[in-house]
Amino acid sequence: MVDASQNTIAQNIRLIQARIHEAEKKYQRPPGAVQLLAVSKTRPVEDVYAAMSIDQQHFGENYLQDAVPKIEAVSNSHPNCTIKWHFIGPIQSNKTQAIAQHFNWVHSIDRLKIARRLSEQRQAEQTPLNICIQVNTSGESSKSGVSPEETLHLAKEISLLPNLNLRGLMTIPASSENFTQQRQPFHLLHELKEECVTQGLLLDTLSMGMTNDMEAAIAEGSTIVRIGTAIFGARLK
Image (tube, rainbow, N blue to C red; front, side, top):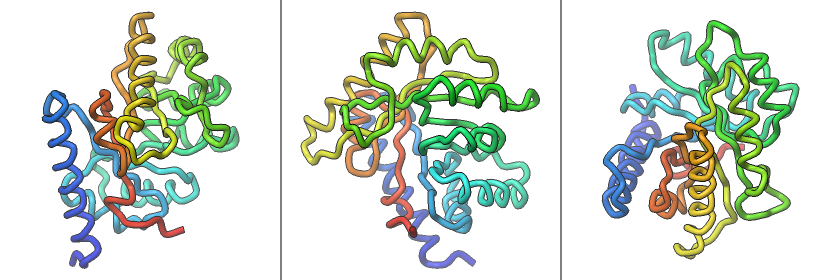
């Protein structure tokens, strides 16, 4: 039986999908151009199942120790499912092996050392690990991410690594309630992606936009919005 909270999760996903579709139409984006990444960090596996019940396919996790039991539980209970797991948090060197083993995507690469370890530790029988480079578009010392000026060089280096598939760029900009200000860091990330493309890198992904700024991100070309609170409620810890 699905309880009230699980019904709420399904309803919330439908509301977010409606926001995405409305923004796609408003900003002349093709229908289906923007993928919803449900950020299930700190949430129990039952919440993941509730989202899966209405065909949510992509889930984001920040904390490896919380994520791996959920990933294994879903794999064991739904062995034929096509769920994709995205790691979106900071990465310590001692965590790369487990990330390389369990995840389909990593959005938070800002050092060549970490990318190399993921490449070395991705198993040969696995498909290449999809990678996004995290860019600090706001220049905040508290935020992870490579500087805009160093992005192209890092992208070129990562693109040469085996077992990785460099897909695009990610950012977590400074919070703002002003729509025009929200768009500025997303516009910068879009420009950085285009610069990489002109240099021959086959990037197709902009991971940008969360609950409060997803429309601004979609206006600037986002292809993945990372939504947690608006789907699952406040984080549990």
